[in-house]
Image (cartoon, rainbow, N blue to C red):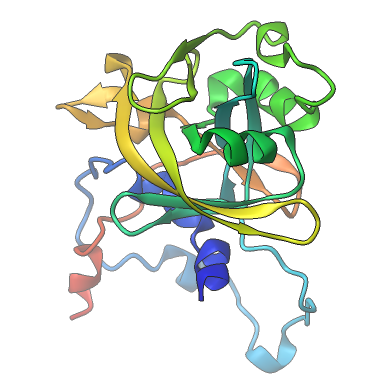
Length: 230
């Protein structure tokens, strides 16, 4: 059950973690894609096989300290949020995985359109090979006041988390469940005291094309647009 939750939660995090203020939209039924695209019947569709990614996924930036207190950050895509204050993600064998076993703490941020190059670099380069990769990217950090983990200053939103469960895997990786104990947000990404997802400008990772995508405009209002069909 835990593995299913970890796999399916990925796309939800960009929206549930932020508590984004929704825009007011037209109450007419939103069917633009359904009516304008000529979809094929099921019998005419293309079989894609079992290896098909749920995409796009959030580009999550996980920051930790190693045994010497050196900050490290990596990008992870296989993750999301479930329940009100818990996050989860799957990692392979990384410096971050080792650090989580040691410190039981991390901060979680989003890659955004302003930091695509640096965020991708953090996903390419291992902290095992480049100990000062945070500094090499030109980034700085501040120690969290609530958990033993660094806050990357260049990411405007950080969730300070403690590890509540690690399910070890045979390849040196692990499923990680974390509890959010606090979140700090730069005032520049707030509107009326809430996270404004347009100001945050997070990117999503498209596993099909290996591209980073920004979010578009609102196409509906949650728990409201469907009332037009009732």
